[in-house]
Length: 256
Ligand code: NAP
Image (tube, rainbow, N blue to C red; front, side, top):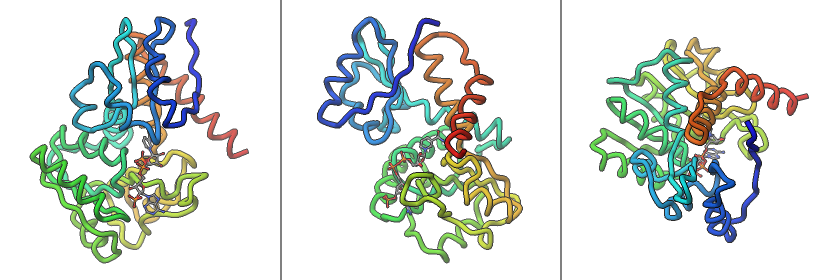
């Protein structure tokens, strides 16, 4: 295909101009990442419901000069959870660690497929409370709790799935090398999904393995959300095997 995918580092004060520029016939669209996923919402002409509910756009599609906003993080997360984790969220109790953009996408996604309850732990409690209130507006059973070991231990003993939506453990972040949970409080058999994809084997996934839990890393979600964007832009099926191989190669090269 005669198409290029480029990284454009974009400061906030240039965001509106850069997004407007995507209306030109040369552009199929764009992905949007931290910290602009919320800001671009107001710059779209049309938006899918899911992106509106999540309150964040990670994919922009240019359709004859009209900009459409989508959120493929939610879809990528669910696909990884079902395919790589063989986990059906229907009726399940879920713990979300973190309350940023990724936590919002994951919470809305998992509610839409019938999760029974969502408990959010975040370093900054107010952000967790705000997210829980938003989820309750969608008729969810949602709780926000402050990040204390005892509270975490108690809640984890009653849940089926924990999703780490913080950047703890992410390479090149202040949380590099850290884990939000240790093996001692992780029950055997539950699913631990770490959104962090660099490194591929995060400290949290190692703790989950040690505890006999079922670990899922962030790489499949990253690839699936990219594949969903690709399909929106091109109308063609994404070459998942090529995408997985190049994502792994890129992470491996960084390690070397
Ligand atoms: P964000 O909006 O900046 O939110 C970051 C979250 O992490 C906040 O809840 C923050 O807590 C918490 N946090 C950061 N450092 C922490 C620490 N040292 N201890 C405890 N909590 C900490 O970022 P985001 O967009 O939600 O992304 C979160 C992570 O998910 C990133 O690592 C990102 O790469 C990953 N992600 C992966 C995928 C994928 O496809 N696999 C997709 C999206 C995101 P406070 O509120 O207290 O600051």
